[in-house]
Length: 89
Image (tube, rainbow, N blue to C red):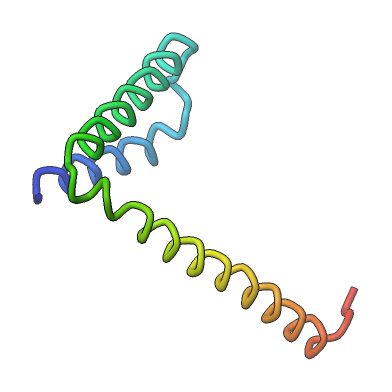
């Protein structure tokens, strides 16, 4: 687990200092293909696990409830803050 965290943090540091200066079109294509392959193999590993595959419906419903609640309460909070602060433009 620590090795994954190490590579993630190393990538973040390199990305921060490079800031997109040295990325050309070929590297962008390679990056997109790498991400698509990663998603494919993650999906394959989920699909081969029968227990996890059976529980996806329950996870999906919980994720929907959490995401919907977050959106609704964020909108409510924005309205409250805007009304409290007033229109200061």
